[in-house]
Length: 214
Length: 214
Image (cartoon, rainbow over all chains, first blue to last red; front, side, top):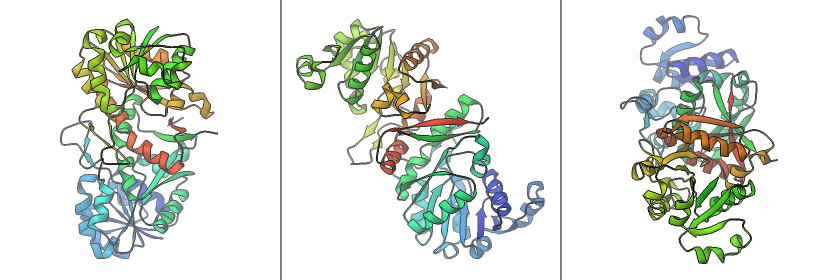
């Protein structure tokens, strides 16, 4: 699949690299393609690097791997027309570090960042997923040595199917479809607990598994 | 141990009954002891029933099993003097159903219901726990057929030790100490995701397990 990954931080690097490894045609979208291409972590990456708009324009599926606070700006630069009709796989978390650590959430409870994105880009088919675990486990969940759970939230069933297919390629064997995009409020509000579990365990290398009866 | 369980709803019934079964001396605190004693679900319960204040006064450890919206009122009726120096095991969730389902949280993010309780009752040794799973699994986690996780949050290490001891008696074999009471923000903000997982699975009979690397 032709995939644009918007964002060059830890999430973008992990997702772009692994999707390319899996045989997808990946272009990373960034503010300054020249500068990104010259950074050591992108020298050997088997991905193209381009502007947010060019990356999104050429893609069948767009991954938002930008940080929560810059997400709306990044998607505006990508351009509504370039997102129209496309699956927008949103991994961002609305973390506000302005008050220090632990961060608070700048949108929550009766709204979510995923829904905000959907309102600003009504033509995009937003699916929230993978924001509930650390980069390394997004792309190699099997490294935990035990099955764990990820979620999808979205209003478009076919877009969710496409995303579930990608999740399966990444090795996720337990994917719970939470329902419409408002359920993204739940996965975004998981972050405060995730951060405190990380603090208690001293590592981000964990994931939740939903253990069901019987 | 002499334990007061404040609240006669599903959580109170489950916890009070199971702690009595385990050999504890349990008194249920309620607004109207006469009325509670006459209700079918309490006829055969092997627990005493008394006012909030009397139950708390006689107890070594107090369980807050009241609903979130009535918690502060219930604890006021229990009386600050009757909570002084005692472990206060808080299971409540700050769920606001006034806008329908799913509920929002009436305190969150930069504060929690557990911290509110602690501020109003500085003499109590508040430990937040067990608010992350359904009643039946609080008292019989083994019924899932697989280990799952619960958490403790609190400012008093010895109070947390006491609570962890009770959790072990209830069958909880994986208890993560998240740290001080501010970490209760994390477990209270888990509820929105818990509710949506319940919606997706069609049952509250699940719990999260924190799967760690290797």
